[in-house]
Every structure is written in structure tokens, then in C-alpha cells.
Amino acid sequence: MWAELLPVGRSAASGGYRRFAWNSADAECRAWFEQQARGRGLAYELDRNGNQWAWLGDPTAGGAVVTGSHLDSVPDGGAFDGPLGVVSSFAALDELRSRGAEFTRPLAIVNFGDEEGARFGVACIGSRLTAGVLSPEQAYGLRDADGVRLPDAMEKAGYDPTAIGADEDRLARIGAFVELHVEQGRCLAEGQPVGVAGAIWPHGRWRFDFHGEANHAGTTRIEDRRDPMLTYANTVLAARKKAKQAGARATFGKVAVEPNGTNAIASLVRGWLDSRAADERTLTALVEAIERAAAERGERDGVRVELTRESYTPVVDFDGPLRDRLAKLLDAPVLPTGAGHDAGILASAIPTAMLFVRNPTGVSHSPAEHAEQADCLAGVAALADVLEDLACH
Ligand code: GLV
Ligand code: MN
Ligand code: MN
Ligand code: MN
Image 1 (spheres, rainbow, N blue to C red):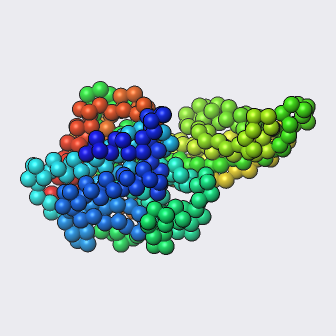
Image 2 (image 1 turned 90 degrees about the vertical axis):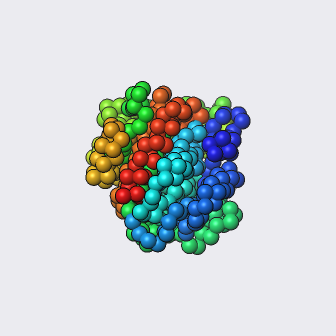
Image 3 (image 1 turned 60 degrees about the horizontal axis):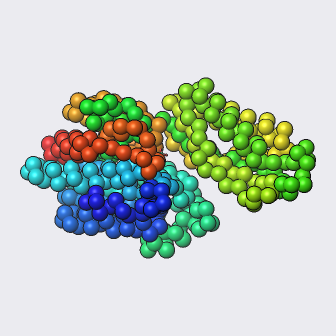
């Protein structure tokens, strides 16, 4: 089943994936999921927020054990971030069936929509809507880089955008959610294929708009310029320096320039900051320091700086008893992570845990992302053990 998914949405040029919410590659991934569900005799369900579910047992019975992840990617993402969790979920179910496991609770596999937020700028849209931490009105206001509104993209892909919103009844029927994910970073050593998540760092996305003045690249004297590129560049340097001092992370990975001409000084530079830290105080102080540095530099450059917070996820401490139960069952280490996940969104509503599968280089959000096959198989076995422990006793 892994082999069928591998070519979907893969760019021949980069070798990375471009599976973005509601695009054609996303549709192919969704078709794959439905086929995997139906092929196993599971009841297939599409929820009001575009998340896909595959049920074994009665979805209305309550106390369900749910596992899964996402199938979308960042621009030129790797093969594992997301899909490893979904594929491993189906493989773990196959393993449990071959063990003759008898389920005492309903089991579901889920594919959450738009986890990476690559298209509309907000991550985990499917789980945020379900948990009610993103309102339908906020979602309706989101646009992609071409100005396409989220509800229009959804409708074009054949989904009903009028139904989106919090789904308390669904969450109330879930007893536990476990997401398996490739490790992003390098905490697990060789011979340690699987870890259990302890906490997710608080993180968010901020948009900096640097407003300058377009002018001729050849004729405008240096002292007459109001060049937002200069303010932007200095802000990037300041962010890196201040993040390093704080033991935190600050990344400008996306930028848009207007009018974007080689021989014109830019009128506007829009840079997106992704920042994360081990605790919220450090993160808040860091973003404030970056904002101050941008404003000070902007004043020197004659550039007006505007800051908009686009999304924010507070620190997530995963459910203590569930985390300890999994770590003991698997004899696995407990790790913190700086990456966001649907599990982090759901953790405020239901007992939630995560398993990480070793990533030998730690590289993620890149075509070079990798996990060894033996470690992936160990991850499937671990997930099967966990599901058996939670759903069969
Ligand atoms: C998602 O993977 C994120 O942490 O940005
Ligand atoms: Mn990711
Ligand atoms: Mn992911
Ligand atoms: Mn993620």
C-alpha cells in the first residue's frame, strides 16, 4: 500500500511532495484512503470538516480508540511526514487481525485534512475545526496565494463547506487518540526505533509586512530609498540571533515580494515567521524582541512594519497516564518535540498520545526525509501493541 501512495503528488523536479489541501494530489490521496478502508471491510466516513475515517465496530458506541495522521505535505515535503502514520495504522490493523485480536472497543483510522497548512497558512485545519479552536468564520476568511477562498477550494473539490465546524459529539465518542509520526529531529538513537511524545513546544506563525516605496533600481540614490528588502533582511538576521540566545527557533521560510522585479526596489516585502520555544514565556518574549528589532530597523530605513499573528498553538502536554502506559508497554523513551501535529490539537479535548519512529538524519519537511524500513516495521508493531492494549482489553 505504501508503494501505491509514493508517486502521488511527487514533483519530478525536486523529488518532494506537493499534496496541498483540496488539490488534485490531495484528492488522489483521499481516494487511496477510501480504497484502503473499503478493501478491509471498514466503514468509510467523511466528516463535516473533510477528515476521513475508517471504522471497525460501531462508531456510535463510545470509547473508540482512534489512530491515524495526515496525507498532505509541505511544499516539497518528504514521503513520511503524515503518510507514515496513516499507512502504519492500516498495517497495524492488519497485524492485529492476523494475531486474532478481539476488539472490545470501536477502532478508527483517521486522515486529518490540511495538517501542514501549506495552502491556507493555518496548520491542522481539519482537527482545529473539529476541536472548535478554529471557527467556521475564521476558516471562511482564509485564502491561498492565488486568492482562492478556502470554502471555494473545498467546494471545487466536491466537498460541502457550509457544514464545517466544531464536532463535539464525535470527540465525545473517542476514548483515546494515538498518532504515529516520523521523528522530526534526532533524539532516537540507533537501536531505538520508537519513542513516545511527552510535550509539543508552543508555536505559531506571524506575518510581517514591510511597507516601503517602489522605485528605479538604477536611478534612485541610496540615501533616497525606502527599501523594505533591507528591513526584512535585517529582521531575518535579528530573528536568528535572538532565537539562538533564547534556545528557541525562529524561521522565515516563506516570503513574497511586490512588485518582484529585478530592476525595481520593492514596495512591499511580506515575510512569514514560524517561531517555537520550550515554553510560552520564552516564545512571547522572542517574538516581541523580533518585532522590536524589525520596527527599529524599519525606522532607519523609512519602512513601516506591520505584524499579524496568523496562528498560535499553546504548549501541549500529552495525557500523563496514557504517555506513561505507552512508554512502559513499549519500553520506549519519552521525547519532547518542536513540531506541530493534529494530536496536539486534539490533546485538549481527548486523551492523546504520539509515537515517533526514528529518523536517522533528523531531516524533515524536505525531500531528503527518511526512515529505515526496519524502524518503520518496528513502529507498526509498536502501534499494534498499543492498539491491542487500548482496544482489546
Ligand atoms: C508541522 O509539521 C509543523 O510542525 O509545522
Ligand atoms: Mn509536517
Ligand atoms: Mn506531520
Ligand atoms: Mn505537522
